[in-house]
Image 1 (cartoon, rainbow, N blue to C red):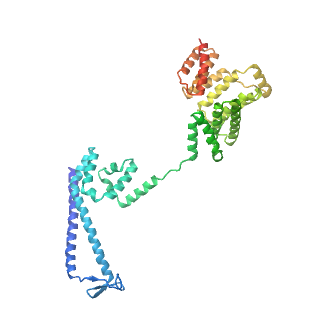
Image 2: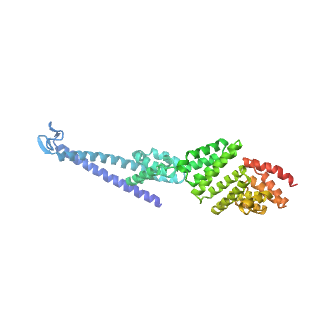
Image 3: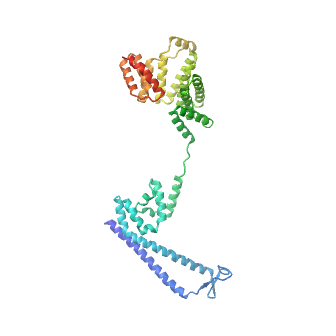
Length: 413
């Protein structure tokens, strides 16, 4: 009931306004026709289209040029009033349908409302501005301009200044945000790291190409070390493997100096030292073992929730626990005290990995099984083997784990 009354008041107000304007126009035209009957005809002088010295000749009489300008403005005003009258008429025709349009749209018949409204005289009277405003609102809300325009036609209630502000907002929102070149590079390198052998080679080539530009950034540096580790793994001959291991360790040593606060740099430098141990004498192998442990401890200190560091420390402890008597004696002779670790230490690190990241890797389950076996807990060792068997084999490390399982599982009975 209130809505109906509001609409009647609105319609009455518009009609009253339209009537007043119509009466004003009629009065103006009546007076104009009377004046025209008494006005002499205007003639421009042949010397100047604007009159001589700002004057015009009216049936032989000279009048000021300002009066002619007034007459021209009156003509323009008449034209504007006539156009306004047409728009008011269109509004009057559209008002009876407005209530139905709103009610239908509230019922979810947006498509039908849009169709009816586009056929209305009001829609034809003011198409340009509505489309501009609707388009801007659609971009702001993720809708098409048609969807935004069908919102009951209320978009046209914006003032010109609001429309200008909206346009400026759209332009600022459409400006392209500069892309961080380093972030793009690192993302691409991470994808290549998980790819084929060709992808891994491309990853290192890409990093080498950008070394001058980003060679002091810690996120770039640890990926640079990792790339040499990848290349070592895919190399086909021993000399190539050793060369990549040596280069990677050197890069890691420099990177640790550049940024000693990056956990990943310490982690991957330790890995390269461990890889390099395969190509060293017993003396250097033991030395690399100390360096390996030192930088993994630092990586855990800087990033205690990274399961990879615990996994690597578990591997180190397990290897140290398996050292021969001769190797221990050499270590004691060279360094005063041989590296010390037990199978129990290794087990605790592997369990920490599982705690931080369940099903971390097939090989972590294998080493858990080995530790339990060495500690005489065959039941637990079997469970770890079974868990490892349930995991897919998708990488070279998984292949290594499967080979270990094939030997370990039968020995558990």
